[in-house]
Length: 267
Image (tube, rainbow, N blue to C red; front, side):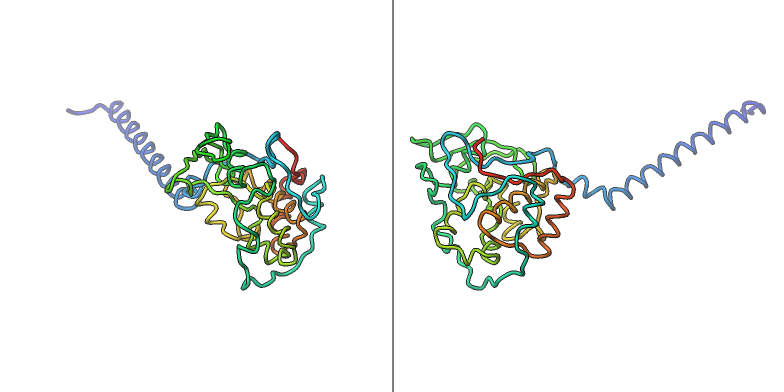
């Protein structure tokens, strides 16, 4: 079949348009792959940041404050940070968890151990085993370090999925002044609700005994509160910070200049 000249021009124009569309599609695919293999894969993998921006300290009615070395002053966290001593780390060779007393004592004397107090405080719809309501059997919560919704179920293989983190790790505290505290003050530090949060088990293991210079919560929305809470704990127990740690804290607080200290007020 022989095409007329107008028909030939029409077909050639359609062919050009098709090639243009194919080229545009190919460029989009290449650009998409380039984005994914540079920054995109990390954006996709980054955990959600819609979790809590702060965490409670005391629950009204059944939690009691733990006596610290000194009260935490109310005010900007950045201002309190500037009052903390800045020094290098002390040695860790003689660190022993037992220096902070038996794990999960009932320091606030409310009849329940500290671990169950924190689970009950932080979980929604907490379920209990037995009476009084001390042993938490399950519940859900928006986990602060990752921002994910998690479920806690007590059990030999499941309890470790949700752990109670010392916001200022005891190993870090030992190297930054806790060696000079009395045995009773160290027990308070290890069981003070100000220094304790229920968190994702793997995130807690990843943190280990790190300070703010070497580890921060993946959930960026929680970092201002996290740093302010560390500052508040260190002020309450007369602990110091290293130069790198202070720099890291200042960088975080620069993004939230209105961030306040964290005090043990019932909520």
